[in-house]
Amino acid sequence: MTSATQQHIHDKIEQLQQELASSWPELLEYLPTLPNSNSSTEPNLVVAGEPEDSTITQEDRLEVIEQLRALSVLPPAALEATAAAVLARKLGFVINTSVSFAVDDKQLLHSHGRVQVQQSSGYFNTLWPATKESTYALYVSPRQLDVQSLAQTPWFLGKRVLAINAAQMIGVVAYIAGVQISGLHRAQFSASSQLMRAGQFWQPGNQGQIIVCFLDDPLPAGNVLDLTQGGMQ
Amino acid sequence: MSLFLPFANASMQKLYQSVVEDMHDQQESLDMLLDLTVLKTVARSLDVGERKQALALFRADHQRLALWITQDFPGVGLTISEALTRVLLALTVE
Image (tube, rainbow over all chains, first blue to last red; front, side, top):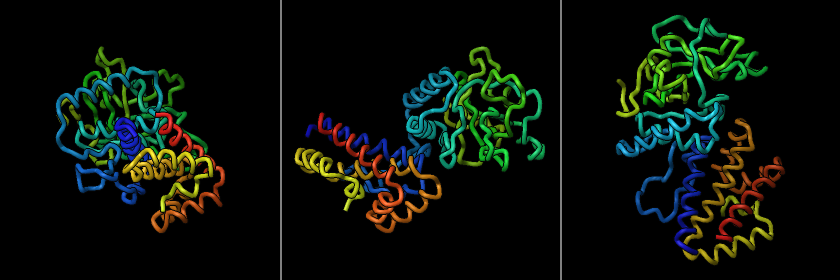
């Protein structure tokens, strides 16, 4: 067997571990470790989106930002599970907090797309009392709702997210307040005017392009993360 | 005993043996790759409640999980076998 084949096996193992970390996180602590790994005595497991090392070079950071920029200009869609897990892990390094593109295996219809300002309150918005935090609201496509969602509180409601403006290299902590109610949806997301401003989604270079991922940590809504520095502005 | 073995039919076992013979001391890595392939397919095929049961069985005994899958979810068992075959074939042609 060639060393290339051995490397291929190890790469595939890492890829599968990352996919399982995203799709079946409860399994993580029971997964076997990579045999013959001399680099560490710790289990060779990677949680999607969770930074495993605080050191990241500027080159790594720029690579992730470039990937985000490339993603943000693609046609609106949801990232494939493996690609989402890999990107979430890298992004977790960059912003030094854990992110993911799925919650309990559920994904939004769009991980990236266009955002426009929400003209009025969307469905479900009244479930939250108005606070300073609640003004950083994001609304998703009504196509996200299914019959089950209508019968109970939709799974995505109230979830804390990072609304990323890749062109300006910033992300704003927001929460999903409901679904769009306008009959004309030229964008996949709507946002409160405060979120539009904080995220600079009105800047000419951005054209409303947005990437949305879930935040595991309860960062306060309205906080702006500088992707070039990895911290809050 | 590895998780993937109960899903290996005769032709797959031949494939596995041919890969192992070429692997020298890397058999552990191959077994792990195949086990993870099984788990990935299980994760994709079962719903949340079923995965909880699968995890409990996996923690108790890998073979019990394999037996449960083949008895209660024969379609998933077939999908696992196909996925394992693809992995082994890919290694054979490298």
